[in-house]
Image (cartoon, rainbow, N blue to C red; front, side, top):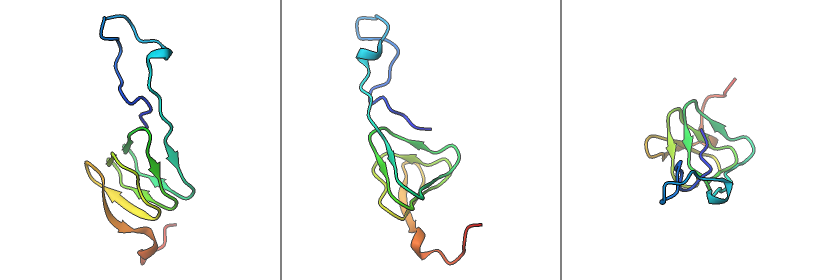
Length: 89
């Protein structure tokens, strides 16, 4: 799941419904050969580096460096995809 609204909410402080003008939308960049596990959440405005791997169910709250393996809530670096001894098929 990607979130792209920095401050998500359905109404403004005065109770009126939000419109597109009220949103603070930010881009998230996923670089080439990155892999995102099922049910992972990536917050807005972040970059997932080239060849990075995000574990299933991880909550990514900061940029992921190139070739990093991240997992957990919040996601932490747990490895490097270049140091893997097995090949994905």
